[in-house]
Image 1: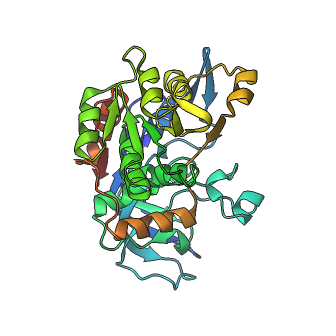
Image 2: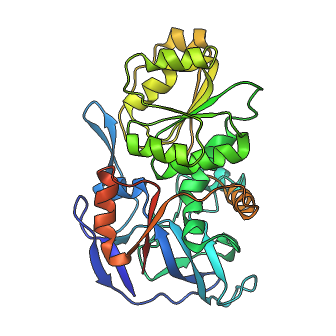
Length: 349
């Protein structure tokens, strides 16, 4: 099978040919139709996350090179192991990639995405930048019938990550607003899911005029440029003291600090993005303002099923998607790194 793989960290992916896996036991081999390109793929390609202050978090210890990225996978069940009887060969599916070790307290609680010894596809185990991907159990093979194929796959990360973060907001009191900051692939998906869950309670912010215009076309009513001087004061004034919650899909020092500035007393900052950096938190102010800072990473298998059900109802409008051949994986990663992607790029073997 053909794949695009990391051969050396910090270098472009390489085209490779390897033997197609043969599933055993409960394993399922999926023929990949499309696989989304996610910002986290950049950090894995680089081999680190930026922590700020010239510090880096090494990400090379979880995998053996060569390694295949890709975790937003849609495809067709190609073959199954002898212990599989829940699914049929030939059925279309999406793959839940956030697979745990199956032995720890996180996995027992159904939060495999938080498993410290996870076996997640495309991050710890070979993923979907390939013609085929091997899935350990049929429970991770999900039905996305009626959802367009290329869109269905990206629900497993950008959609699921946004959905899980928005669930952490809880019920929004009448008249309150929540802020979405950052309108990349996950943020633009977050806008659509937020509108499905919370109606017109959403305001958005992004430094890109193009992305702000895209947000308006997708139904955003209030759109802001966070770089405009004193815009935080204008937002606090228009929201009667600040937003109820801010979901930061950028994850930089600048975006997190901006989000905190526009929170009302008792507000919640939910950090999702992984761009990198650090912020200084004045502990007395955190207590006096009653702010909460919550990290949110991907989502659970149950949340993935909830999201797919919501999408099947037609409640979530599609985001812009650009299809490219698998062989263009490097140009897709480069465009994402340079901020030239609105919506999502999907690779098609």
